[in-house]
Structures are given as structure tokens and as C-alpha cells.
Image 1 (cartoon, rainbow, N blue to C red):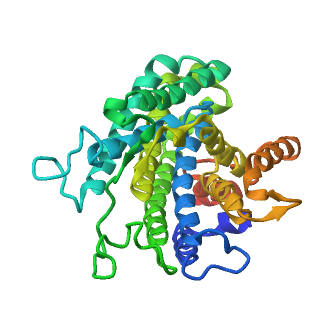
Image 2: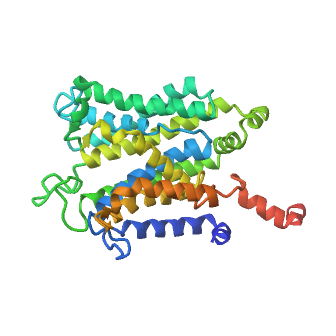
Image 3: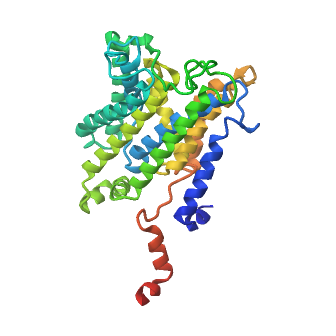
Length: 376
């Protein structure tokens, strides 16, 4: 399959990719019986998958591309979600919706998305500047602490974040308003039928996922992406060869943080409620599982890894075996999967293929027929 894919032209790859994403977009409307989730909304499951897939792509930039072990990525996810909630929730003292605010009610969520990404990127810059000179376990502990600091700050700053009670009535896109749906297709009131609000959030998340994949793909083929791979393989050797390792690691951290902020904004609008328990260390580990399971460095592989960690618990929800609800054992299943994976396939289910990132096709053609270039 990989050989067939590599032999395709760029136009053919785009055509097959567009067809594949079109088929995936139709899944909530025509769910295959083998994929249906009988005890929960399939559209809602797919919306959650799109959100986690964006997180996995951002974390893959940090962990898979640059080789930086980040255990507190959920902190960036929380910053993005709380940025939207603080600016749009009526329970927030910083609410900016209304005649005296910055946003109209219909476009508040959309206006907050770039702000959430910018603020999260700045937080990644501030965290990375003093800490990215650390490596390995030391960097992992620092990032783990960052994620916990964000959660505890949201839990204790009750005057701003409303503490453990959270912020409700967060803004969301007001589209498709009608008599049957006075709040639009993205509201939780649109809970019936195949095209419910979960399906609409999935479609929106799918569009954002494509944009992020295009951005990350272009970065992989650029000088920045080649520097990330060099740092991941051997940071000392990369530095000896003239790569400014600190600068490129900071780039990875900042870009990954911005993508995490985008996913946090998507979560805040979709759930319309933000509270500290969502951003615990367990969720941060699940995001990392998606990257490791799918294949570090492979952006499409981590998307499939995200699908596994979202779909499996929802598919097993309500399924009992010996009186045990299998949906409650997701951490056991993922733990066993990681142990087996590390023994038999440590590179992940869909590992990144080591190849030339720039001018790869031209180089392969010249190697296959070197005399053609000489004659021309």
C-alpha cells in the first residue's frame, strides 16, 4: 500500500485524500452496522474523535516530530478551552458578549478561536523558553507540572473561573437557526436524527483537521521539519551540524501549543461547559497514547490512534461481560495495548517512513535513472 501511494502523483494523492475525507464525513449520516455505537450517539462519538485527532496532531509535532516528551499537553488544551469560556460565558467576570463587549452572540465563538490559539501559543512560548534546555525525563516532569498547575489554578481561582463549578453557556456557532432549531444546528437542542449537533461539530472538526494536516505537512517538508527530525534522531549531532536546536524545539512547542488551543476551543463550544476535572493527567496520558499507538511522526497514523482511543470506549459502553461494564475498563485495555505494542511493534501501528522530506520524488527518479540528468 505504501509503495502504491508513493508512486502516485501529488494531484492523484489529493484526489484520493479528498475522496477519503468525503466518505469519512458521510459516516454519521450512514453509519456502517459494524461501527455503530448502540448506547451513545455515533455523531457525538465522531465529534469527540475529530477533537482528539486535532490534539493528537498537535502533540505529534512535539513528541513525534521533534522528539520532546510532553506529559502535560492537556494544559494547552485547557488554556484554549478556558480562553473561550472566560470570554463568552455569562458566569465569567471577563464575559465580552453584548453591546459593550467585543463579540456579537452569533460570532463570539468564531472570534475567540484565533484568540485561543494565540494565547495558547504564547503560553507554550513562555513555558518552552526556560525549560526546553532540559531533556528526557526532566522535560517530561516539567511539562507534567505545567498541566497540573493549569488545572489547579482553574480549580482554585473561583472568582475568575468559577472554581470546580465551571463555566456554563459557552458560546457556539449560531448557524441554521429555524423554528424547529431556534439556537441553530450546533446547539445541544439539536439532538435528534443523524444530522444532530454532534454530526455538525464533527464536520466542523473535520474541516479544521484538514487545515491543520495541510499546515503540519508543509512544515514537515520544509527546513523546519528536517530540523525537527534531526533533533529527534540525535540532538547533539544536529547541533554539531549547525542546527539551532533550541530555536527549532521552541518552534515545535509553540506550534503544538497553538494546535492544542484550537482543540480546546472546539471542546468548549461543543460541550458549552468548561470545568477543571476534564483537564486531568489521565486525559493527558490518553492523548499521548493516541500518538504512540498510531505511530510517532506519522500525522495520519496519530489520527487513526485518536479514533481508536475515542471509538473503543464508546463502542463498549453498556456492553457487559461477567457483570462488568467493558466501557469502564478503557484504561486497562489501553494499558495492555501499550505493553503489547512496546514488545512487538514499538514504532506504533503506522510508523513514519524514513525518507527524504524535500524533493523526494525528484531524488528517487534521479537515482533510478542517473544518466537522464547527464544527457539533459
